[in-house]
Image (tube, rainbow, N blue to C red):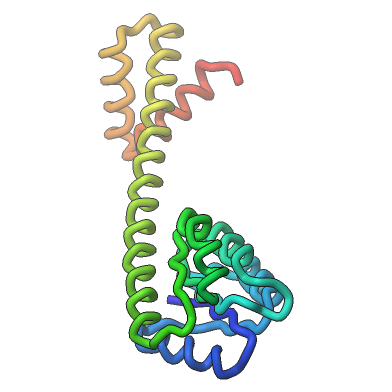
Length: 188
């Protein structure tokens, strides 16, 4: 698991990386928002921690950018006034906002919470991808059945059995059989 740390000073960077190492995270450390944006574009991260008030920008926009780019949640740390101002917007990105000063325990709890939430989101995303693929398969098979019904005069049940039989005989997926049928009977 990889984490992106964005903090202006070496002391802040060390303190944050120390907490992330306790939860077995490998860390990439950046001192500026520009550096962090480049890092996020070059590789995916599983989580990020931004200590607001960076040299080149505040950091709240960076949190939204990284959350969108890497499709992950993170932690944004800032002074009370700014943290309070950005908290609702950042929550929509899956970013937990903490107010300075913070303890290592509070940061550790927030990191574990983000870790668990990200794991859940990844599992749901995988399930969604699986269901989307199955839906695509059903669409191809349905179109192939219609092509068989029109071209060969089969009933829907006969077309379905034809696709199933070919799939078993040739040991190919129903989608592959359906695609071949569509190439044969349907003009693209």
